[in-house]
Image 1: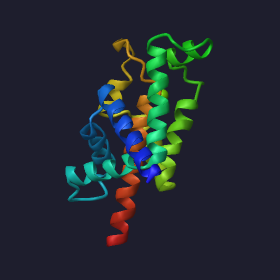
Image 2: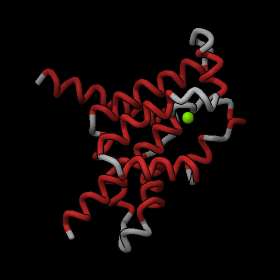
Image 3: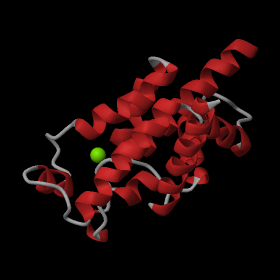
Image 4: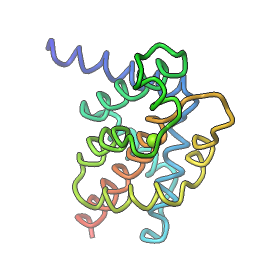
Length: 166
Ligand code: MG
């Protein structure tokens, strides 16, 4: 029971952080739709939302959200030590830990997730384009990868489930 309670705390905190950083469940579900609509003819927005919700209920995913967004916020407020402060604030492309952290989300639903993640990370559609706008003054070094990874994981989940029901 102790664990169950802790999970609730993590899930609530992770969801609140996403919301505070301007990310709605619908934004992530739209990325799932973008990734999956060519494979599932009658894919509905509610199916995409459902799968995003299931991904957010996983502890590994909550941990990645809590860690990554915390680092974004600290960097945005110049509260990290150097050299990490400058690296994260500048979103240096060779840093790479943001992507490694995102892999812990993608990993939850197996290897299709990596393909989806790679694709969406290259295309940067919808909300990801907005997150990559460096002129906002916000630091989204971790958030963009986290959002892309949740969408990729939800897409894999959706693909696995529909393959099983066919
Ligand atoms: Mg990044």
